[in-house]
Image (cartoon, rainbow, N blue to C red):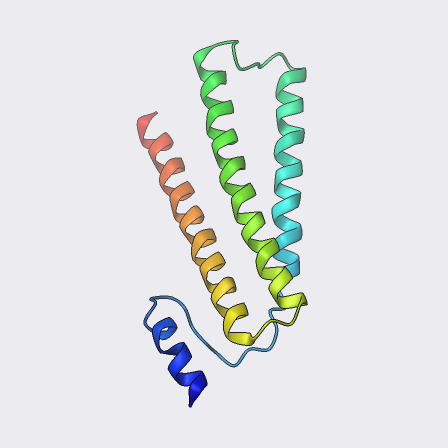
Length: 127
């Protein structure tokens, strides 16, 4: 009874579910993939620099660096949220709290996916 009263406000948040899940098996893989992408982005910048494609070379190169740096910052924020979700899962916090953290993190990542689909579509149509 007390649990239902405490969770009444949480149930009204769109997109947040309080299922009966006891663990989140894909959370670790998602964290690793996020770090892997950040490392790959760093390597790509190194390759661009090695080929003489620098920030101050021309406006096109500046835009590429700006676009990818913005993405890296947003990705780093998402990885921090994933680490928080992983920590709540590893520390065996109450399932309600873990579920909320995972759901909010999932909403963030889905928003990022939609945003980048929009950016890529915009770049294709502008060309």
